[in-house]
Length: 229
Image 1 (tube, rainbow, N blue to C red):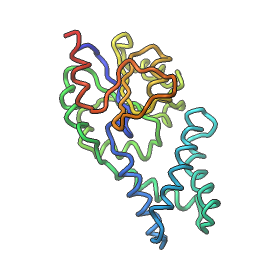
Image 2: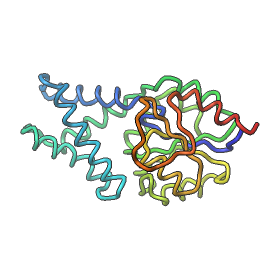
Image 3: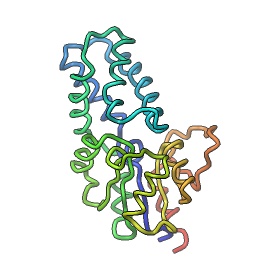
């Protein structure tokens, strides 16, 4: 096996976050009697949520403030008379129950189990990520889960990776696999470990961030990691 340590991003890499998030959004708003135009409302929320997570990656906002602020902005824009502080924990509870996996996730993780050390490295909220991971089919394969909120620094901050490698060894033979160029790939590149961009939709990379490898199917990881055997 070429690498002794494989760091996996969670959402959008192993976990089907889009499905889990959409279901959590719909369940939350239906609970408050909002059933019309949910599809359009969700699209508007997604735009706001993506922007605020970019701010989080750049350390412009804390995860604690992020929880509520995204809903405050959304409610103001859509003129919804709801309390962000009430909505946020309900939404997060539903989100923490979303354990859907992406195609090939369990196959590749079970294939790697026992051949190298596996760890989850995620930007996220701990009381969402911990129960999601614990309730998933992947939990038994991982000994380590690193969550930015618990560490205090998000990917791509080098301090996130410093924390990981204080706990684990094998920096010289480690790789991070993730779908986010600005957090997973930039973070890994800057810290000096190999990177693999999971790009299932085959998006054109205009970022200037260059991964060591690029794949569109998780099962392609087998070929990459078997090189050098």
